[in-house]
Image (cartoon, rainbow over all chains, first blue to last red):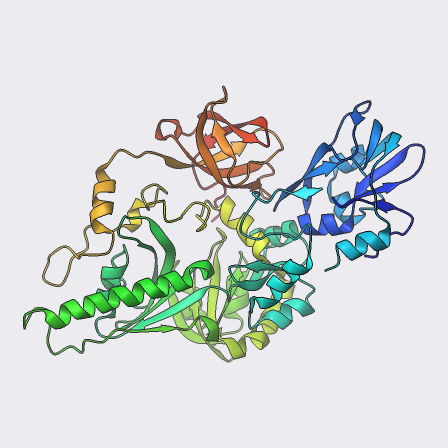
Length: 122
Length: 417
């Protein structure tokens, strides 16, 4: 799967789509490393998130990981469909498997697709 | 996002691939089936010095295929140590905790090798192929340790026998025990699942003999024309077979099994599925439930220790670890291995603290995952022995938050018969 070039990425394998609100998910690199995702724990709507801070957990049969917010702001929507069926994150990480929508008050450090690809090559 | 490095040591995904890790992977040994895995698009992982398939498509799909149809596993990383000689059985009795002289040819036994203090060096499956011929199957991570220990223990036994007064143990029998490490020229392919028998028997001229094999029995035959030791053993909790074949013959046999098995629902399955399958079946994994700080009794596997085994003259067989294990067999246990089922969604993982519902530490999780078959988290853990009763309500500290769990009898999953 090639990386969408219109997104921003973090070193922790999240992606960020700019907008009002902005959308957050995890990359296919992260989803593939985890294997079949079976459980998502996401922040509640209305919760404040801070760039670089842990805001949730992603659990697969094999492993578990923490979700870091790429931005600072307020959660305005969580993907209930993905919470109900976490396999969406594996099958469509940049589409139906998005995780959060956030009203951004402050951006965090992000990478371009090329920069992220170079970091996670392999 | 960071993947918790403590989550499971058996097969690490590569959340932050770096050039250093890439280099490490390329230094690993490769299975004789490596090219098959690459052709199938497997995600490879570095495991015990080998580059092995973690998964081909989906952990859960592979796990489910084994429970409902069949899975094909490459276990060529496992170690095969061939032990031959007229005194091989006696030598193994002195080296391992089991009673291998009592093992009939054509049968296999689950056993262990321990240190002098009773700590487990490895858990093993020993196959007796003939009165004077055994194969000791060791975990990949422990082959070197097991080989060294067997070499030393066999030498000590032979030295003792050479010194023994005449008539002691048959002076006419040749005092030779030969240990050959066959790990690198042996491929091990497992076919596991309810459809395994139909698949394997369709490829062998000895279909009746294979069909008649009991659990932990083995027969030498051919599979698709390839000489094979076919054993009814496995590590999944399902019926199934393990095929020991020459490494050079393995790729063609692997492809043939995939082809013949596909109509039965067989899929290739990786180490990730293997781990979740064995966990559901309550089977210990060396490095998790077993290690050098653990005795077989701690793991609830005291039955493998045969303190009653005797030499041909009727005296108790001396074996490495006997004194420590005798003491341990009658001592009050200090901990017990239990099954835990989670009431929530967050799974306990290797290394997480087990606590009372009030948060008092009482043990540690050795393996844990969301069970694909059962749909809820399961774990194995060592806990205080007074808390080992099924039904006991405990908690696990899952990354700083207490998750309620309940003690259950192992295994979590038992196949329908």
